[in-house]
Length: 193
Image (cartoon, rainbow, N blue to C red):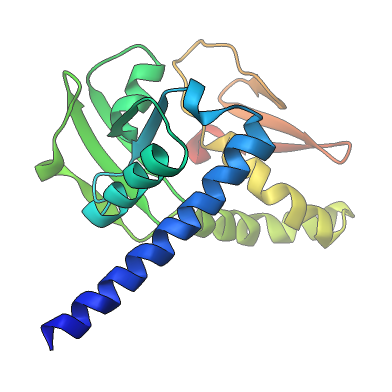
């Protein structure tokens, strides 16, 4: 009955907290090399983060690690904050899906949010498909296509203001971007960027 379902929920919550504790222990003590009791924690979360996950994270941070404070904010708001604006349309392209959320004066407008089941993986697969013929004719190995397609997609999907300097491996040439890959240039025309 209801008691058994509640017990199952409690077991799942304990497993979640154990997994979060293990992950945070690795992050704090092996990656960051910090004492969590001496640092405030800022969490960027997606708008549909389940309440039980938020509660588990807070419990682990406060009870196990003794964090002095926890600030949770929408990743979209934090992304805008990072570029110095409070309002904008945030497009978050994940591996498997893309989320779009307008933010006005620091407030996410959840009612206008949208999620589509197409992400960076689909873009990368399409880029590989489009490059495959030209790549094979170039004499480069298929392994290099595999290695560099993701980097090319990532660089080609950057958004910047017109006239801004490009950085990284890309050099703007007219309306195209040229990426150096295995000693050869890969040109991506403006219509792909």
